[in-house]
Image 1 (cartoon, rainbow, N blue to C red):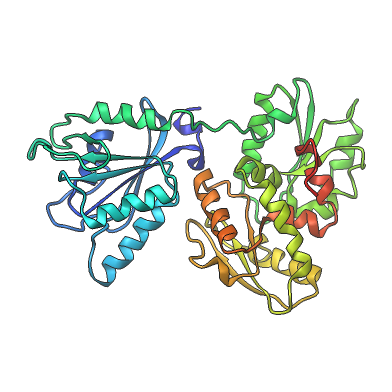
Image 2: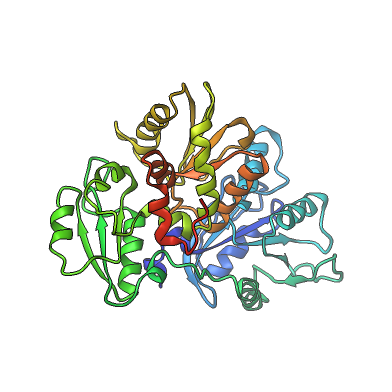
Length: 397
């Protein structure tokens, strides 16, 4: 899959970290052969993470992230350092760029943060055209010069080696299908649906069905019964938007396997088991419980928005309790999950696996149950076992 076909969350996210003026921006410009980042002798030129998506051989589709210096100062500097810490959560590979032979205390702190996250990383000694290296600190340094390009090809090859064996092997749905199977996709068209296009999980599932050599039948809720009745044999799977579970289960006979795009995405992100366990907490929320609803994307909110309107309403009705809700979107997430009694997260199609895993791990460390939209909705409709059955050989509940 090339760059134009690869969703942002599926690209390798590579972050460049270090102190101000270590040459992070210059190194990115050299690697890409483009003026991606502003370069200056003035410290603190990079004030926010800068991202560039491209095809980088021998790695393939990547997103390079240029971060502010980790030694920035003052009130604004502290905010920039926080942004740099946040960038660590999304990276699949981190480059610690330094311009001297021994790491400073701030660079050592960055290294510890990478190691705690089990984040693959490389230490890169820049500016060797000006200051040839003569020492090694703890881990072997790669030596480069962003100015004249020496060592850059070797760095690219080292980046590729660091990512070997980490390719994603989980499929969205193809492993559940056989060539010639029919899959019915139920895609409601409402005010929240992007005009003229499908949302990303629907696109990805459709592509994976095609890659499996199966047949796709796409319909809205109103035409679902007619679509099923027109088939010569039962479909291998019915996949619906979770928001219309209540309507769909009335139209799909019990004998037909049924799941949702959001539930498939939970499995794809390595989040399914945790989300299934977390859904049980919905039944035991106390009055005044705090619920965090997290989304991985940012979009214009509609009057019937799933995250801020529908889910809160369904959760309160199901629990019979007065609940307090907080909301996050994009790459922002709670710095203190322990404040909440439950976290309900979207499918995470805009987040890479590492960021989704970091959020799940943060909830687990805080002892807070976490689930996702589709699994929560299936649970509240009394069909959780049915909706996850196609994904398990042995059900966990």
